[in-house]
Image 1: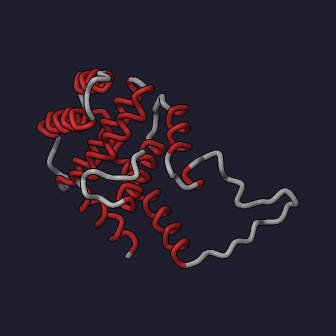
Image 2: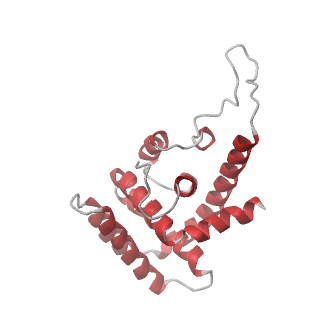
Image 3: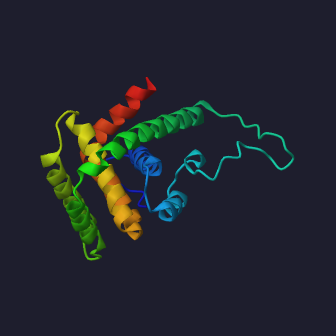
Length: 196
């Protein structure tokens, strides 16, 4: 991943969005990209709590618990990560209910676009935005627009990765970039409101 974010978001914002999208994908039901998600989790700066196989609770080889003192910044970061994981879990539950509303043709077309290795990241973002527009036309307006777009973007990412698991890394990166470019304030507020 680039350490430079081209859309004006900070590395902290990108980290939050990475954790949110990764947590969403991890908490979705019925997906076929377990192996690819595990690899992606090792490549991203995802905290160990996000990786399901890391649940030793700090147990050392001598049977004692690992004692570690956290400074306040680390504690804040860990509590923020827990909050993001909770938000991702809640959004994944809603996303699972929305999943059926996305026509397979939209997913197939988007997957075909992502398979085109000649497309730039900007073109991929445009194709994701066009697919979202298409889905939004048929989607009920009973939820706030930003939340609907955020959920549908992540559901589309899940469905494309489910359709073609090898596309997970690309669709993940494009979805994170799309969210950072279009929904960053909404995501920041979502996290901030949960922390208050």
